[in-house]
Amino acid sequence: MIYFLRHGEDDESYIGGWSEVELTEKGKEEVIEICKILSNIPITRIVASDIKRARETAAIVGKTLNIPVTYSKKLREQDKGLLTGLKKEEALKEYPKYQEVEVTRRYPEGESLMDLYHRVRMLLKEIEGWDEVLLITHRGVINMVYFLMENKLPDTNKEQFQVTHASLHAWNPKQKKIERIK
Image (cartoon, rainbow, N blue to C red; front, side, top):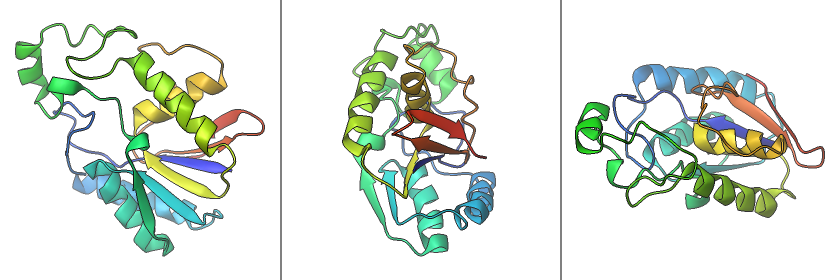
């Protein structure tokens, strides 16, 4: 089994993507809480996105489970390009069409949802033989796993799979199934 954990809450007034936004205090508490469940799951390896909010999440989880963490750019969120790290209100002024999300529209100098979908598809092929691994990543990545397992193309409804902050999802590559645990 491979587990996907979304990072804890961060400051959502910023455009996320590859930004270096930190976890909030609530986000840190969410991660500490999910560690209670993780401590009862057989995990032998932790791999995390190298983006700050995922690194902070991984530091808490790794310390709690006493498992070293490795980092991978392959687990990064969708690249929001020039909008990365901007306050949402500022982004709306500079890039008024950014909220009109379409699956094939790339952020300026960034990725589209389809780009992310294909990147995650390649990642799953690479890791499908892994077992007892926890991947700490982002909502966009986990959503793409759901789309791929349901054999659907992505859409713009990012809430549909309930990938909330510090939510935990189990992926069984052999059964081609992913489900939310917590």
